[in-house]
Image (cartoon, rainbow, N blue to C red; front, top):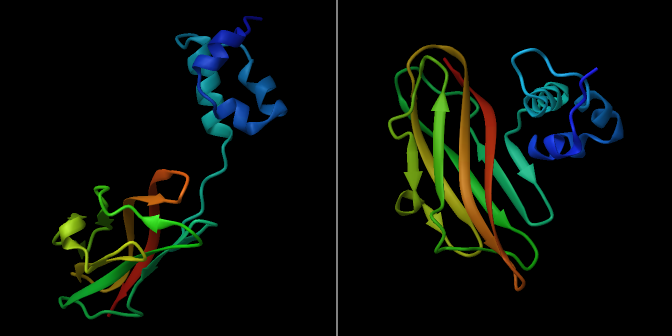
Length: 173
């Protein structure tokens, strides 16, 4: 059996390493014809990763991030949802970083502005960032939406850029 060499596994990325010892065995399996051992290891590692759950909020030791969506909106009427970032502890928002929010929605949900940048923020201080994202539900029912926010938080020791994606549902009547 052809086994991937350790150097090929390293080139495959850190996915195998983050899965633990059992994953290394799977990552070292024989390569599929047409794939290099590194490509095979990478594919096996990705296939074995559990899917990330959809979330409308993220809480960590450094920050809280929430999307606040109206309980229900009227079809054809302008509405909005809020994306709010609050640093925790000794962290603060790096106001020089190009903070932005990208949004998308399923069919029947119109987002007049797919990307909002710093100047679009309703509030952008070291203690809080808030974007108000406009949308129009063009059809009745539940609509899936997603927002990705890029930001950086600083502490007395370092500044760390972050990117988080939040998924949520908008209901229209």
